[in-house]
Image (cartoon, rainbow, N blue to C red; front, top):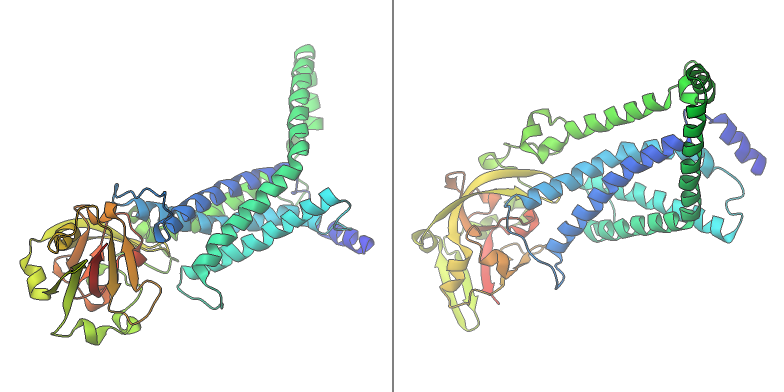
Length: 404
């Protein structure tokens, strides 16, 4: 087995590979992973808020920005991870797989990191197309895999820390020695030694990429992928959006739709002449017909709808302030709200909204979108729109609003 792995490693050997190449790719991947992790934690916290979480309502586009950054960084991580694996995979073929306990932990952490990264990025990309060909819940799996990735990465760094520190100390010593030698040697000798000793100065073998050329190719590929997909999240890149599953300005009333009324099985109930929005606080309850909601003071705000899949769209919304609506049943200003949709089922049929959003002047029970009555697929007769919230929490086809 050892001879076989050595033969395979020799067959796939390339002078382009080097420790320096792997380090640079690792830094790039580390930046994209860090962005993904932090923005993902923020998104998960909004949907499953811990007790200590502080809810930001300004800027109104904060979730539009963070989730767009999350998905864009995730897409950028795909070519970076593939390039990183290419730079190190001969090392993965070495035999035996574990020469000691420490070596076994190191190899195990690498295997866990690679496996979880491949699953995380693949399922994350498929999720942007709202396709779920697996039996497990995506959101929970995606969240915990992120922790597995970071845990395996931290374990790998901890194991390699002595070697990392020794390498940096060695580089410092070598740099000082080189400076001393350069100061003592004539300029012509310095040029000759650089030409002989620096592999980058010699250049790659014929037909082979240099390290810089390979990194440039990876950078160009990653940049092109970002530029042609990030337009679903950032309006200034929308003209370049060629491959993202959503495009701004499309859909009913020029706003994309994730879940239609037909898919939610609410068309009949939402269009019923008997529809009323039930608003309650403790023993006080009132039913508001659509005409009664329209008779209340109306407010207009420009707010983004931003979905976890990465797409977003800023639009003009008009309706009743949530805080005025619950005040009509005597709820105090610090009240939280539980909202129920007409949907008969679904993970987001019931939505809880913290007091910070309830009391924000721009949180509306929206009745109009872009100057028109809400389209049935956008939540007619009434829906929630609030600043800085994921699209899945902007509940459509409202049935009840309960102040807590």
